[in-house]
Image 1 (cartoon, rainbow, N blue to C red):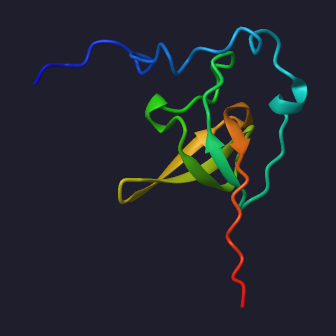
Image 2: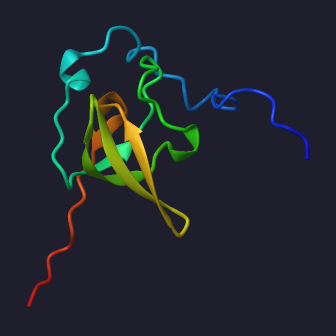
Length: 105
């Protein structure tokens, strides 16, 4: 087998770019975001912050908050048929507004 050359950020030119209006300072409200256990979140990499970043393959996937470890949150996702656990900084998490359809009788 041939060894893979490069780091885990290889082939992420478009995933790790931001619109020119979103570049610059990071709002502190996003940096110190508080999430509760059981919240549904979307994994979205913020290229300005390097700490607590996850593997780029999981960019755009939704998961559930299972707990907290230090500043990062324990996120459980489903990848294929397996449950996986990621430790992600709140800067790379967005609360997702998932609502179930209401049954009408």
